[in-house]
Structure formats: structure tokens, C-alpha cells
Image (cartoon, rainbow, N blue to C red):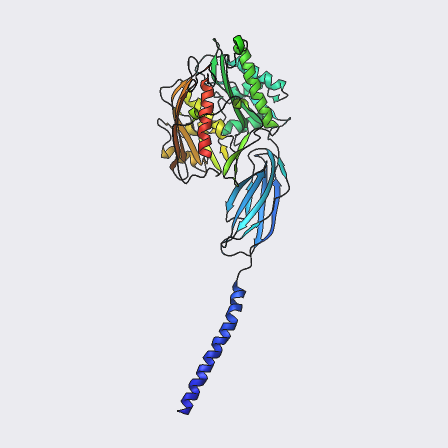
Length: 487
């Protein structure tokens, strides 16, 4: 009995000692297993290629140590005081190519599961220049007439070449371009395909192409001229560098007793070209206004808002120019980086070519957003021809799958619509259209809207605030739609 009691006491004492040992060692064991705090080791940034927008890139690698659980990373850029998140995710290295010229600073951040955040701090300044400079050789394509009216296209084309030459731009000889077009059976001049873009570069040494669409031409009283012009980089994947438009009528600024009225369509054309060339000069000098998403303010902000471009002259967007009906998918991220394909709008009893006109206006507006890369319309057109796409009521799922395929166009968003009315040559201007944006990857509609307005809506005294041209109305209305989509 005594022996049994001693045995139990010894066993009890062993358990007590083990308990005390565990109590003293467990905290130390836990301390040894606790991960090291998240720490920054460095951000390595290397310039790859030329220091030009679209052609050059920054190779960025962020090194960290420690951290609890999963660590996520983000790459930030700073331009003109606007901070934007370019990439985010679990990868810690990126290749980033800015769409627009300008001065940029780069930093990286890392966040672990506890919410701990580390910051690399801003890098040195990286200056990216426009892909076009004093040595750039341009080809000026013949004017694409989408005005539904007879127009002296050759004279307009030669006037444009003369204006560009007088500004000091190097222009491919007109006869050389004609010989090239004949040799390659190039008849369409409203855009360029990948094949034509590569041939222009390889055979003629052309760096960029001027593509001009004549939206309106009227020689009567009052005369009317509307032009949509863009510069496209040649090569295996043509890209829109700059795009703007201008629409003028002889009665835009008649002034006292009609002294300011313009009666000559040639004089009006010269004025329109001057506006476009001033806009192009802004781009070539890095001052062209664009939109960037400000991560701190959670909104789009304009960069270089002091500069005026051709279609910014008198283009105040008012309430009557806003769409009358809109829908945007709740999970759509306006700050995301998207490649956008704009297909010609369906013409529903509107004047000829109105679908192409409205589509080009949206290409112009979308191209101003630095998080969007708008696919050259010539590439979209060629893809539609190659795959025999017929879109009588907008793109089908099958068509969108083709445009969204990484092996074809890689479009994240496909934008289309319908034009119900487009009047602007006589009487009161009137425009009526609908828009639909389709997410090619998710295969769902992320935006739809309907817009209609007249030039005299809300005008009561002395035509103040009236919009005499369909071009002016479409500019305001398309801008209002894109503002709502991206905000």
C-alpha cells in the first residue's frame, strides 16, 4: 500500500514537471515559429528599348523578405502629380510600357495577410518621349470620304500634305505612295491592316501614317467641313498615337452684322486644318490632354488640361448631351487596363456612313484614356473581313470571341452600337444613337446607353449655346458617354 502510494506520487510529480517544462518552453517555441516582419529589400528598375512611349518599357522587380501568409504586390506610377496603380497581384516583377509620353516615377508596395504594408519609395524620374520626332517619315493616305456627299478629295489631300510640310514634317512623296498602293492593291484608306503597316515600314521606311476621314463637306451657304484625323504607328501591330477632330460651319461666329461669317469652304478647310495641326503639335511636345485614373481620389483626372485640342474648342458638355438611359455592370472596374475594339455602328435609317462616323468619334474619345489601348480600326476591319463577320444587330458571342481571342485581336472590351439619326447639313442638327460595350473575356454586357439630342435644345436667345453641326453634337454626346463609363 505504501509502495503503491509512492509510485502514484512519483507519477504525479513527473506530470507536474512536464507541465511546468511545457509552460516554460511553449512560448519560446511559438516565438521561434513566428514569421519575420515584412521587409523591403529593394526595387530594381531597368529601361528596355528606346525611351519613347509604347516602344520602350520599364522592367521592374521588387524584392521583399518575411511577411505573414500571402504577400501581394502593386506597381504604382506618378505622372503630373497623379498616382495610378498599373499592376497588382502576387507577382513581384513587371514589364510596363507607358501609353503616353511624359515624366514618370515608379514605386512598388507589398501587403501581407496581417495588413502590413511596405513601400519602396519613388524611383528617379523616367522621361518617355513621343514615338514621332523630327526624323519621322510620314505617309499621308488619301482622304476617306464618309460625308455621303461629293467632295474634291484630291484637293483636300494635297492641301493637307502642304500644311504638314509647312510645319516641318517629313512626308513621303505622293507618287511613291500611289505606286505602293497600286502594287499592294490598297484601296481602303480609312485605316491600315497589320500587313499594310509592316509593308509601309519595310518597303518605304514609313514610321507613321496620317489617316483622315471627311465627315462633312458642304460648299453651299453656309459651308461646312468636319474632319477626323489620326496618326498611326506602322509595323506589325499598328497603334493609334494621336487622334483628334474638328467640325466647323461658316456661321459658327458671325459676330456683329455677320462680319465673322465665312462663306468660302476653302477658307473653312484651312481653318480646320490649322486647328488639327495645333492639336498635333501638343502631342509632339508632350502637352496633349489625356485622362489618368487617380488612385488616391478614386477618379479620372485630366493631364495637361491647360492645352486645347481641336474638338475641345467650344465643346462644353451640358446636361442635354448626357445619355438618357445608362447601365453599367456593378463589377466593372473603370481603373482597369483594357484593350478596346470599336466596330462600326449599325446604321438604322440614318444617313449613309453614319455608323462609321459615330464609331470614329468613340475611338477618338476612348483613345484619350491612358488605361485604354484602342485597337486601330483598320485592324478591326481586316479581322471582320477575314472571318466574314456580318453584324446586323451588333456583335454576337461568336464574333466577340474572335475579337477577344489572344491569338487574333486580344480585345478585352468590344464596343458597338446603332445610329438612328444623324442630321447636320441643313436645318437643325440632330443625332440619335445607342452604345453597347461587351466584355470579351467574361462574355457579358458591361455598358449600354441611349443618347439623342438636337442642336437647338435648351437655346432661347440669339442662338447662344446652339450646336449647328452634327459633328459638334456627336463630339459632346460621345464624350459624355465615355466619361460616364470611365468615371
